[in-house]
Length: 226
Image 1: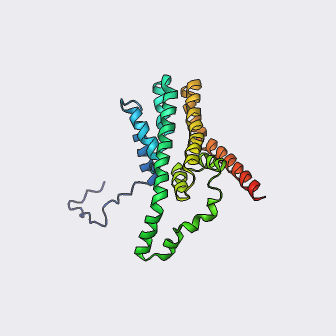
Image 2: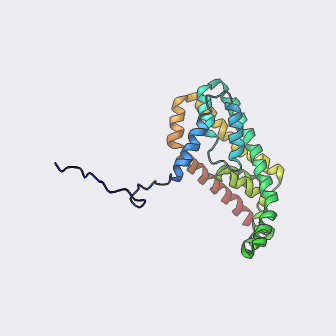
Image 3: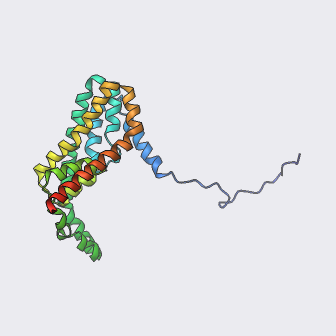
C-alpha cells in the first residue's frame, strides 16, 4: 500500500468543490411544504385566507393544497373551508383586477421614461381593443376563470381590459367556487383516498377541464362571428 504523502498539495480556489445552485423546482417545493405546514396550526384558517387571496395576485401555490390538508384534519369543516377559499380567492381576484386596471398606464410611463418606445406603445390601451369586444361576455369570463392558469393571469388581464366589474366578480364566483366545493365533496365522500386521487390525476383533470372550457369559449366566439 502506498504511503500517504506527508505534504498534500493545498486545495486552490479552482480545486474547491462547486456548490450547485438550488433548482427552481426545489424552491417551489419548499413553498409547497411551507403551505402545508399550516394545516395543523391554530392559524390554519387565517393562512388559508392569506394563501387563497395571494394566489389570485402573485403566490405560486394553489390554495387547494392547504384546503385538502385542513379538510383531512377536520372533515366536519369541509364546507366552511371551501367557502373561505372561494371568498378569499374572489376577493384576491378583485385586487388583481385593480392592479391590471390601474397599473397599465404606470407601466407605459415607466417604459416611455426608459426610452423603450416599442414596449411603451404596446402598453397603450388601443393595443387591447380587439380583445375588449369579448370582455363583457359573462360566458367567456366564466370560461376564463376556469381555464386560465395561473388564475392571476385572468384577474390582472381582466383589469387591463377594463371588463365589467360585476361580470368579473360573478365569473370568479362561478369559476372558482365549484372547484373548491368539489374538493370538499370528494374529501367528505372518500377521505384520504380522495387526496390520493387528486394528487394522481390533478394534472389530467385540469387538462380535461381546460380543453372543455377552451372549446366552449371557441363555440361562444364563433357563434358571435358567424
